[in-house]
Image: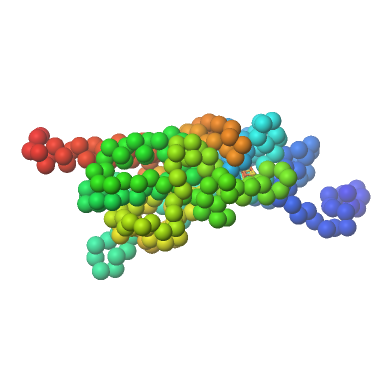
Length: 320
Ligand code: SF4
């Protein structure tokens, strides 16, 4: 405490400031509300916020959190007590990570690459994207499906099952992580003696439990089509994996140069599901807000795609 009376100021010894990765926790325990988190200060009256229990997806620890929102916008993450996972705490990186989902560059409408000379990406309808996606699947003899280690177990299972029934040619499923050069849970390690982990995705162990192996840097065979499903935490493959590529899930406009279609999906805040954290603890979470824009969950997108396939197959056989 510096100065006295009205001049009184909260400060640090020697005015050195505070520099650590868990400073936000001070604002959680400050008994008088004198310490506030820069990111949230004066943004919203706390009594307007709706709190939803969830799991932080910014690393493989999977800290338990509350997502506080109003009018379908997230305003802050706060730690939720779980003695087995994070106690009462969370790191600042995770605390601020909701900004990635609220990013104005996030693609929340279906997009397709123009056939005209400029080959630009433009927003379009679900019908157009599904028609084109169906055509790509039909044309492809070899399809690679990459599933980010930020997908839930339910999503990964559904993608495996549904695409196996829709794709006629050769089909290969692999996982992608890409954060801090992590490929599998063996590459993951603690970044400090508290919570932070090297693997910046929440479900590497979950995808491993489904028997999905990590993507290789080079495949011997060439693929006609690559479908890349990720939710904004796993990194997109660093190079083109197939002649035609579909970006599915959570993408920003800067990440889609190498893709023909974008099928917009949901963030962790907008869906329910299960992650398995770095210690093998299974954690289920519920949605905190409604989907942004025209984004759809995996089930919704696959249902529409399979209806399209059925419809086209019936027409091809002259059945009405
Ligand atoms: S340690 Fe990981 S899971 Fe926990 S709050 Fe930080 S980023 Fe999120």
